Length: 339
Picture 1 (cartoon, rainbow, N blue to C red):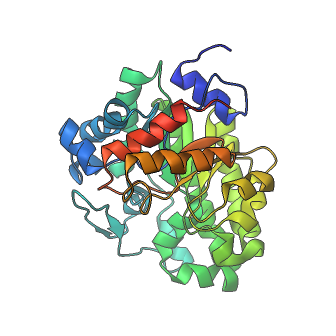
Picture 2: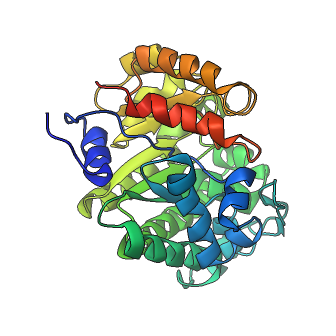
Picture 3: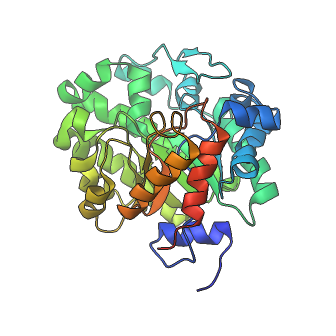
């Protein structure tokens, strides 16, 4: 069988085509303290400066061995873009959203005129450009963004879950804003060189809101993003936290190329729940990747591979204190796996 560049290999794997072996990637955040120390680029500065962000993303490849580079490392840039209050992160902890900006439809109208090149989303796009200039011919350049439902929740706060059930007009209006923003942001990342797009939508879970509201609010939004990316020949990956097993069919209905499942999902069962989407996962980022030893990671990785995972990866964002050796063990397991 032919050998491929990492860029070709991942693109083919995400389309379900034959490849020489499994790509070694992480579709969720890759930054760790040991990588920061190796490359000299640390959080929180690496979340805010394009050069430092690119340097830390590069360490995922040069230090760990991931066959892709991926930015950003947190999921607050989108909410910050719209004016939400953010609690600053540290070297070991990511920033978080602590204040919200939307209470009424009037608030939504005030946010419709925006410049996608501004703020930290602009920094992410610049980091992608830097990585593309260095690695774009060989490595996949993965852009990632907070999905539209979770962005709406960041903007509206915990009232959001009740709002979609009691005021559908308001819910759809906010989802329209966030979805249009996601599409514009994704296109900007693609313009700067991204060839794979990851949608991280942690609170868009049918386990939280039920199948009816997932179908009504989430599927159409995800489908619009996926369609926009497919028009640009960009593969899409969807990650939603928690046990998404019962809703994998609904998730796939948006047309995503792959679904990243977290550690609460049984991979063998997940593979049976979808028709075409590649199942990615799902090493536990805490109890396995952070806490275990490399030889244990090899065994856990084999179990996930034997269960049928299309791509081996963490089940959620990598914990910042995860040892390099553990991530390297996962990478080795992926590289040694032939479909």
